[in-house]
Image 1 (tube, helix red, strand yellow):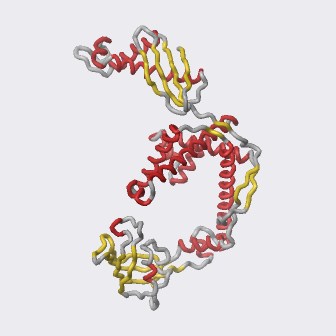
Image 2 (cartoon, one colour):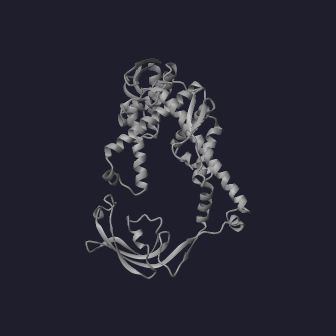
Image 3 (cartoon, helix red, strand yellow):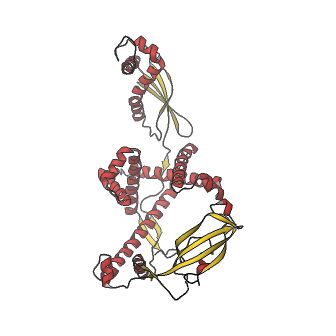
Length: 436
């Protein structure tokens, strides 16, 4: 086999591969035999028809293509290894000259990985934001826990206040006509945490159980129902009952409800959780700061073609996430410029490509490689995140093998970031805002 390599602009490469006539003919004959196993020709059993009849039935070109598909993986792999090519896309055959009895010539096109020039990435001193805990963090965490076990108790003899929970019947109108879907009975509304139309919950404060009244509101200009955007509306309201949230007392009995024996043990457990959260936050800030400094110091020429591919992939993922939330692309672009969305996605695509290329380059320079334990750890993390076993994750991957590539890249990212953390000095500075 003979190979010549032509490097073209924007990291494209062309491999001109010549396969000796004997090898090409053997591949052609093998392709005839393979195809004949699936072709029915009168008077012959499957796989027993003469070559000329198989050629007449399926066409010589199809047989040639089958032969080339069989020959190319090995030929391309040898050509890539011999010429030390670092491909970033799957090679494809763009043309061939296949005449039986003569050498086969095939032109294969692919794209090379861009050259990455690393700046300093070791022995740096990097500033990262510290994580400072608010003085009331422990008390707030305790209150949040109490809220999870709070009870809603009916109150009588007073008007509603801004922290109550009410059961209401309501009926909405715009220009005297009922709003489609704008009515309900026995609707539970938390007045302190309402996501209703602005001004709706506020007008229910100071009312009594059993009271009937009307309120007026204006729908937001960006309301999801176009017919109601910026429209004035009237709602007929009836308060059925009023409830207030009653927090459990902080006692040993309460601590036992959450799996601990005493209030002191509960506080100690929460304290430990806050400390771990703080340390994770500091670690994340440090990793991000180091990685940003390393990325900023690296130089990579990323082609528009690479950005197009990554942006198309990100856009597809984005559309799928929107669809899962019941949001169409048309709905999104009514309130946000499509060109701005696409611009943001392309910027994200370019950033991801550079990050990935720099990580791969550092891994290569430092001989950082993945072991089975690294992937096993990723399986465990994924299982914990989705509440399924490692075995179930492996089954999912077996059905979607492309996932393994993504997990492998994530695992490599983790190992490179760990290397960077171990080989650079971090100094913590006061954050712009208090974190926890």
